Amino acid sequence: MAETKPTAPSRSITSVQPRKSSNAISMIAPFACILLGYIIWRYLLGSASNFTTPDPDTSHWFWPNHKGPKGTITKMYEGGIIVPILIGCFLTVITFVIERMLTVSRAKGTGSIEEFIRRVQFNLSNKEIDKAIAECDKQKGSVGNVMKAGLRKYKEMIGNVELDTEQKVLNIQKEIEEATALELPMLEKNLVFLSTIASVATLLGLLGTVLGMIKSFSALGEEGGANAASELSKGISEALYNTALGIGTSAIAIIFCNMFTTKIDAITYGIDESGFTLTQSFAANYK
Image (cartoon, rainbow, N blue to C red; front, side, top):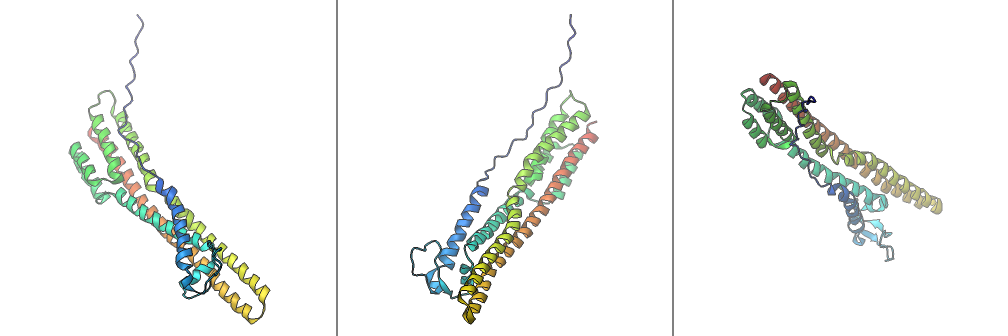
């Protein structure tokens, strides 16, 4: 009779389920913000009542040639068509800052990550797995989710008699890695918009300034005289609104992008620490 080889232990099925998260905000928000930026520039800053000499030609509905702004803020209108794009970039930054604040706050959980890990360690040292899982339900957040996935596999491996301790630890570690791989994209999502606008806003501001300078010097060459010098200085002042708006938007984007990166690094460190806690605890308690 032929010898029958023992079959390999069946691969354990992961309890980690992919997160279903809509990314609609990242597709809609930039276009909506630029549209809102145009509305602010055209109908608020560019309202005919804000100028001493409104454009009488109604065919210029997209970009009326109003003259004589009455207020300092209204002068931004004469900065040109780049201004509504810069306003849209600023609104996009504000949108994603709020969205990331809410996401990172949820990912952090309901309490201190360090205290949570210590409580789980205490329960594991007493071999009270269910209490440790209950702590994950209280903590929530990314660290709590990863720890809970690892604890479920931890509990499953305790009753497994087919694998040795090293294989069980590897299974727990793999479960934690899979859970982490699902959590990290959610934390880092949409940060690319902040980092991109941080670079692009300054360039757009400089582009608007250059276009305004070209227009101003062109007027100087056509008119000549003292009146032209006055128009030139006014045109330069208006063009510099582009630079100010671009640099300001870029600065805000850089500050918040770095702030969120630091917070995400702290959460990632907590996830790594939780994984190390589970594997070391299992190796020590269930040799």
